[in-house]
Image 1 (spheres, rainbow, N blue to C red):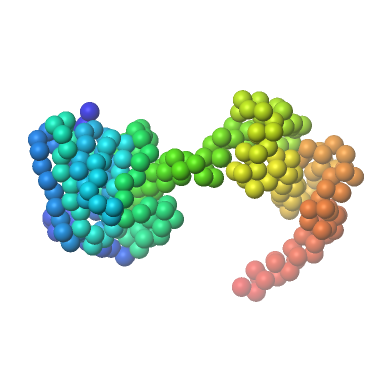
Image 2 (cartoon, rainbow, N blue to C red; image 1 turned 60 degrees about the vertical axis):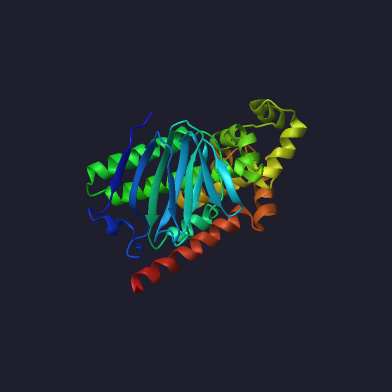
Amino acid sequence: MPSEQSYYLSLEVEGNNVCRTDQDLVLNCAGVCVLPRPFETHVQLGREDYYLQYLVQGKMRVWLEEGEQIMEPGQAVLYYPHTGYRYAMHGREEIQYYWLHFTGSGADKLVKDCRLPNRRLLSFGSNALIVSQFEGLFHDFILRDHCFALSAASRLLSVCVEISRRLEAAEGNRAAGVGRVYRAISHIHQNYEKKLTIPFLAELEHISPSRFRLLFRGATGLSPMDYITVLRLNHARQLMLQTDNSLGEIARAVGYPDQLYFSRVFKKRTGLTPSDYRQGLLASAPQEQEKKQKI
């Protein structure tokens, strides 16, 4: 288990409790707290930055939006700026939790995009990735090289995104649906030019074809065959833009041995034949080049 550690951006104590807007994301400080004896922390006015706690051992009493609750291992709490916080040991087991404080002009957007609420228990279980990112943060604070700010911000993003995804999966919404058909979606992206069938894709997830269709549409908004078609046509458009390959070669490259069938599918989806689409690209190219020369 970890030992007590703390790392600070500024050597001045007050310099680590600030709101920063000159950078997108700033880690003011981070660490892991190990408390073997009873304690209580109560800061009525909170801090200038965001405060994240992730409990890995023991239990704590925490006073949150919904009143006093018991925080258990695998749970986290985020306190927004200027939000008071109060917590104390519950029981006799040693308390161990990872913590960090962050700020920056992009901090509010990060919290909003990850849908992380203020002063609520976030339950997602033990997570080795989050712990490893905290340990990486400690390494960044020790190293403090020219990549420190970038690396620390990247690790903060990883922690917040991982928490958000775990919460989403626990709530059983779209992310959970994607996870249920993840292997099939990954296989499609790597093999969309090959012949793919519903029974084969369903077998990858060890579910029936009918169940697979239902979960796939719930996760992506498309049927499996429509999803494959969209990938194929998107790649075809890229090949038209980036190569001089014939339309027959492009059709075969994206999984359509029959060029006429490819043309029908392409027109149905885009409203244009592949020839017309390519002609439009060629016609716009000189205009774009002329604009660049004027600029």
